[in-house]
Amino acid sequence: MTTQAACRCLFLLALLGQPLNVESHPLKLSLSEIEYSSDQQLLTINLRLFLTDVNEALVFDPNSTELAFCQPNESVHAERMLLEYLGRFFHVKANGTKIDLNIKSKRLKGDGMNTALGVLFEHRQTQPLTSLEIKNAVFTDLFFDQSNIVYVHVDGESKSLMLNKKTPSHKLTF
Amino acid sequence: MHPFAFYLQLGFEHISNLAGLDHILFLVALCAVYRIEHWKKLLILVTAFTVGHSVTLALAAFGTLVIPSNLVEFLIPTTILLTAVHNVLSRPSTQSATGMSRTYAMALFFGFIHGMGFSNYFRALLMDDSSIAVPLLGFNLGLELGQLMVVGVIVGVAFLFLNIVGVKHREWNVFISGAAAGIALLLMFETKFW
Image (cartoon, rainbow over all chains, first blue to last red; front, side, top):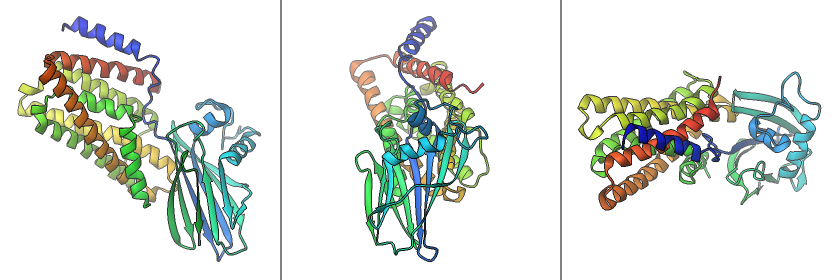
């Protein structure tokens, strides 16, 4: 095969590949950490979601700057839209009662397409914790291979869960 | 399940379910120039790529080196393009020991770049930097297991075409490298950071 033919082959392949949505590292993950301390009677939920996934879920554009989470120009609708979305795909039930998700703080970590939005929720849990049901199906409506890792720490004892479209929730008893 | 097992599974699935296109494409390009008879060279190349990943893991875990994600995402397809071009310009079956050493060094360096993409990804995701080592180690090991499977498939397909169908190795190399280069160019356009 001559160099000219090889170039033609390469060009054709590039053209044929045009409709493919090729992207590097389409690894779809979220991480959440749920911690309960009976001494402090406090249950904290820390969510870590990739910003591109959040934007795709809320405004259907992964690279949108419309909501501008954690920026000085953050949209007044950003938190409400996020909570509405989480209300459909994420919940934590302590002793069978669904916890109200009230954002305590938010922050961004990372850069470029690897920017994650961290959201912290706090809940005063005065009754001893006997069960914890966690549903985390965030972004499973968008990506078939979305995996949501959940770390649970209850009075120093840790457990890990992998939730996804097939298994969106899990109940732990103590 | 232990978190290490989660990440091991994720790494393996990332390769085996074809989601890790860039990784697979790099392996395809890396293997295109070799026949099954060159399995020792291939093994060293893949190992060099793995070592590159591991170096990145260590650097990321200790926060020694952090390269901007946008640059890394552009460099990854660039490594595929360079490997494809290298395939067409070199003749590894007759390559000298020095030439092969350069190729091994290239695989090592490119492994470093590929691993950096995951380091940035996990660094952003994890709650604190001290917890990065276990996920990265598990994910990288899962990737390596997946890579071994992918390399096995690639070498098997190459054996079929080269040894049974009778395709000339030079034509096979140009065809595979050309395809890899074409897709790599698309990825480069998609991830250009300027």
